[in-house]
Length: 370
Image (cartoon, rainbow, N blue to C red; front, side):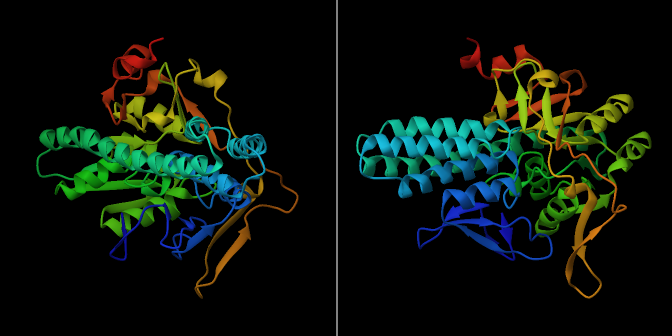
């Protein structure tokens, strides 16, 4: 995607051979590129949400193992491999909910096994990370084309009118390597000349909708309005939402979906009001080993300070953090919830669109039948 006319991915190796990422903690008020030089910095970037979003977390971890390979002991293959395994475990522990992280680490470890010498392993690690990043971007672009069909169907039913779309959190290009999942169909529709308007949930407590989704849409010139998290049901009751797209951090084989906290409530409101509710994700988000999202998906609980403290721009332009509750009030901060398959109209991935059922997913991914 483009920022001020220049094309960017969310993660890349620059001409100096350094790993660069867009620092999402600085958005929307400043655009800043950060350099990650070692595994410690990669772990911190993932944990502290300098990078975030299922696909980007996976790609960052993959590049993290490449950095680990360049800094591992070289006295023997055994010591090299032991170091890599240790760093893989550290990366795995940074964020427990999104399956893309485990997917990327497992794939990179298999990639490294192909090397005989340490030099070969380093080369393979770099190539593997780049392949994961390229694949993520390619899959997200395909998601956009499949989701575009859904938006085009709505335009047929209301010709010449704006298609109103609601989304929750940020599942745009900032959450992946490029294009995004839930926002990819919106970008495709906008670029095709379809008039769309996006209702952007603020997405408390970290406000990824307000700070990231709104910034993305503004950069791309897509009409949008920021709304408080609790407004979505009201809009649906009054016919002001035509379709909902959200992303996913993990999808089980039976179609249950873990996504940013608050997604479940949107799905309930959508079901009650007959609004189509679609989940968009690349296949790296599917965890075919699970068949019950509510009982099997680990839900990350983050720091209470994310709920108690909010940051923003003051009237003088200064960025500041402020406490919004009494000094002695504690908080709980679950980062995700699970939306049961029965509330989901359909799943959109790079292979197409299907109902949120095990049989439908296996039709798209027959290699997972066993």
